[in-house]
Length: 198
Image 1 (cartoon, helix red, strand yellow):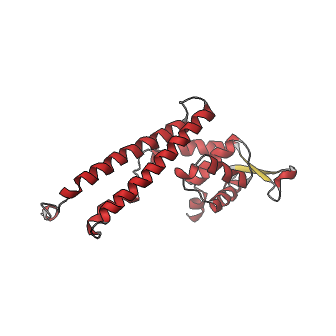
Image 2 (image 1 turned 90 degrees about the vertical axis):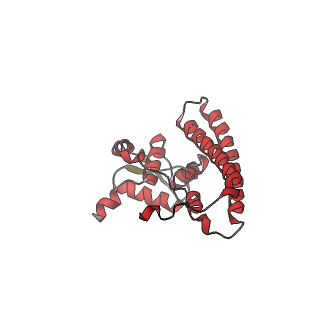
Image 3 (image 1 turned 180 degrees about the vertical axis):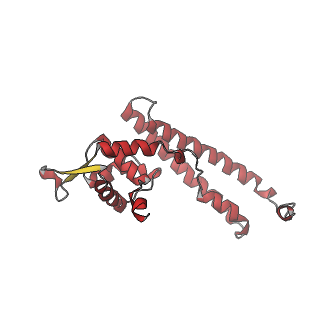
């Protein structure tokens, strides 16, 4: 059971498999590419996770390492690339139903659910903080979209679709936050608190 669990491909593994299917890279290049593409906005991959995944994927035969003779490679001389087995595993993993049947659990919604216990004035302060954060993220995603469109040259690309979804989600949440701010003076306790126990 433990061996099977370790061998299962995680989201970081799949992202790395996909990157290495494009071209061979050193471990540090994988990290640079994750940063360049802002991958950590949609997939949690720490720097140590990269090296853990590289070792795990190599042991499973999903990627292979070859030594580089490039003098610029420095101490890190192993270039990793996805194998045919790795591309097959990636394709299989992307067909799993779980990608389409899960709900996000945003931390802010958890906070809203618990907010009735916060001190006076905290709700307004947190709404303002969230609004400021979202406005910054919206501006960043709009800049990212401009950069992606410049790079890919057309709007029919998965990166464009992903970023436009994030932009729409941020805009929707900003509208919702403004609605909350307007409705806050009317906030009240449940009228039928015993309903669930009846």
